[in-house]
Image (cartoon, rainbow, N blue to C red; front, top):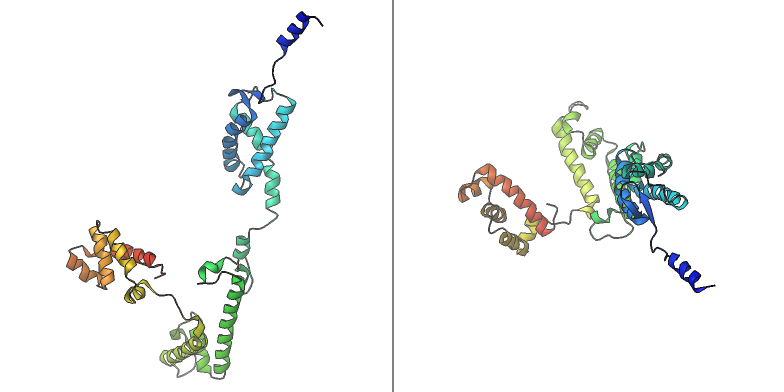
Length: 295
């Protein structure tokens, strides 16, 4: 091979491009990564707003559509040369398989909808998710079994009291009033000569008996007031320090700590009673949060 021929061949040899680019109708030559970054937001908006794709399925739909674009570009480099960005996004949506994914989804039912239409006698038994540990002080394992045990304890207590009063018609009425939302007044004179008062004191007796049987379930959480009076004053003092530059909020916190009535404190500090009452409500929430209490 002559030197001249070698030189001519070498002048026509071009290095391979590090990244392949494709002509587009809206941005000129672009890599597929750039095309994807440009089209993805538009296609996502169309899929969510026009095609009604569920958010949890959005990534799968976009992947399907963009894969179609990639396959077409692999076969025809000029595939997007005459398309606008919107047209390309629409192509992604059409090839996203959103209809197939939707048909697959409607074959199943959300568990929340199942609970909502549940006709079971005790639907709450189907709603123990295992995530209720945050509601139980100190229990971080096997919460569903703890909740089941609690329900059984309450059922046993109610059945025990029922067995004790089932032979007395008036006590049965009181038992009904004590364990349901029916008032004693609604039950008066169902049995001749037995007024509301006769049923009420029996209902109190039954509630006391239930409380005795369920002694393990007495509330153990202290209120912020109980913690403060027990000597745990630091959170209250820190809260006062945080609001020392907001005088009305500072006075509201101080009034709650001192146990003053809203009317008396408003008069003493020189505030409008309604305005001061609103600040006292907010101050109470702040104290509850500071002490980590529920009330």
